[in-house]
Image 1: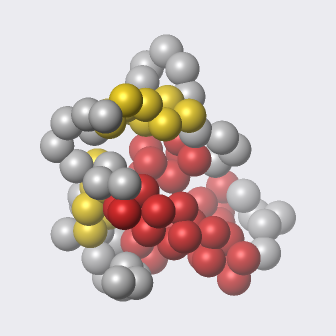
Image 2: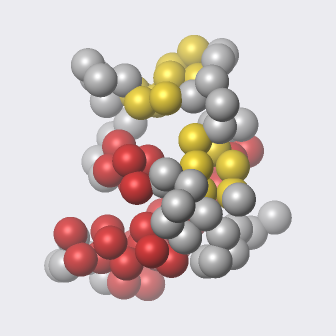
Length: 89
């Protein structure tokens, strides 16, 4: 199922960002984060909508093409949702 821009992504219970390394700690282990992956997840606090997350990233990475960024953020979060690491509220 494709996440909607009005939904609010959040880490699922038992998942958290490592404070030492660029890792997402999940109950089954850890996922290494690359590029803006950590920043994307920092914005997924359950309060911001997916559209808000994308807008904030676009402001931080102004040289990135908006449609490409949007697609990549959605694909990244969708893959993490399939792994059980995030949920859309």
